[in-house]
Image (cartoon, rainbow, N blue to C red; front, side, top):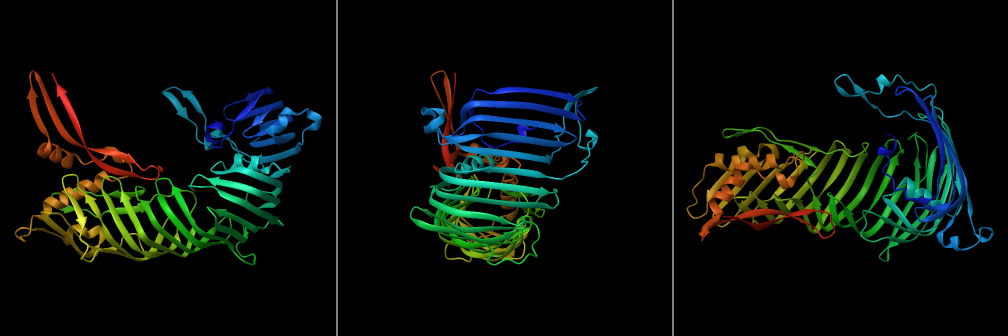
Length: 503
């Protein structure tokens, strides 16, 4: 049950001696075990003479670990010549086992936390640990998405107090490090820094420096752990030259800026400036729902998908420059310029500013429209996620113009004209087509399966080709494929041809 919640990368190649006893009930389980590893490899480090114990009882986990860590290259040497460093860890923390599946009279029944009848007799914490030179092994285990591929590191940590008010004292450093997070296209090299947690209250980052393809990146400053009223010097700040970001399904492109983190680690607040350019913003993670009745469209509800705890936003200035596109796969690919300021927090942001649509296409499956360049095409945000919009789209046969209105009221401001005669067309038909497309954009469905039935049937009926060859019948029809960006950041649409042969 515990391991299914652990996402950390853990590769162990060793002979493991283990003995343990589990007793109690599904409501109040108890576990006591001991293990030892004479010699082996944990991730990219060698370990030897490692012994440990783990116990779980009374809603508390106790861990003890002692051993030696050294470089894998040292394995070729006799034990007495190996340059090994001691690893010591001792911890006692409150931990509640997750709900357990047990057979019931009507099949499987999942017990809730309350039904487990477990209470925390006390929530005190004790943690003591230290490791010299090979601290990156621990960092990679705790944060596998921030992969350290080289360097030396010392770590020392002491925690006392309770879950609500932990008192943390610690120290860590890295020298000659190479850090390759999964959201960067290339690693940070020549990384050096020192982190100190003072009096269990403030994290201080001293001299974090590194380079990205020869361009500098620095982190410096302080951040309170719990109490934001504690006086500090410079807030924790990231100052970065341009880097190539690849935040899968959110953004792929160049980014630079200077941002600061204030408040506390428990309730952080972000401020500063970020510039995005020559990239793609991927907006699949907007949830969009639209209800349509005959000729009438209900209001469209838009919200951001939440990821993790809310982060305070204090005037974060985001600029869009130079060949930046906003993409919704199969539906929209438009160029944007301008900028917004973000206040509020990450779960309910309050953007203000203007974004201009410079070019691009909107794909309604049966009809593909382009942004008309010599028209007013913009979205103005005034403190919520529903902007004031105006735009004009066109193709060879028609022009579709939405007068200035709130984005969720677009249907009441739609004008559609035939280019050849300049006559107005029936807006109700196009409102139905667009609304059908918007329903297909719901993030609750996989985009590749969300092409509206109405549009698909119309497309295939109008544009498929069929015939006979001897006793066989054949049919060619248009299809929409899923094209993954070479860097894996976004998915784009591609129109293709499918074929069916029957005999």
